Amino acid sequence: MYANTSQKNRVTNDCEFNYLGAVTADIILYTENRPMLPADILYGERLMIPDLIALNGNHWRKIFTIFAKLVSPSDDWRGYRDGFLLQEKEAIYFGDALHEMLHETRNETGDVIGNTTVKIHLISGKSTWDRLGVNLEEFQPLDPQQRLWVKDNMICMPYLDYRQFPNSLIEIARNYLIKATL
Image: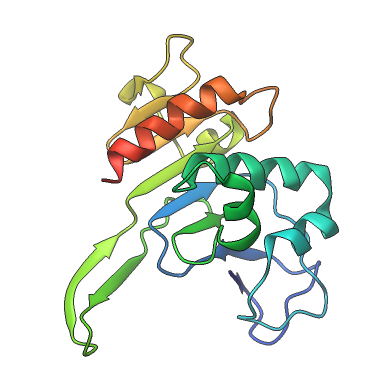
């Protein structure tokens, strides 16, 4: 996982960074709050989720855990969270617009054989919906209680906290993601 910041040399807890995670992410999570980063980390250095949890505490443990439950390719979300989350397929973006990463697909010899963009945008929390200018009238509810909303490759969801986003709702969103990313 990499931190992209407005500084080129060092990431500190005082600088503003735009995203964490894979530069070729297929799934991007949008949220309001930025975690603190280790003050001694170098730009582009790989970050590990357990280190970020140790630095940021329970709040970010919940966010990373729910994110892992949503995107883990198996039922071992703990192992995925601690070893793979944000390393190749996911990123967290803190900007004011949807982030359309374009990345090249290459064959074994390194030749470009195609381009892809982000497959899924996960927009977490009503304040993030507002920041990104989401109009829910353009979306369809995914669950009977209308806590998950979908449109094209975007899912508006509650903030990643267990009170707002219980396991039953995580399962509905996860099943949709599995179908959407096939």
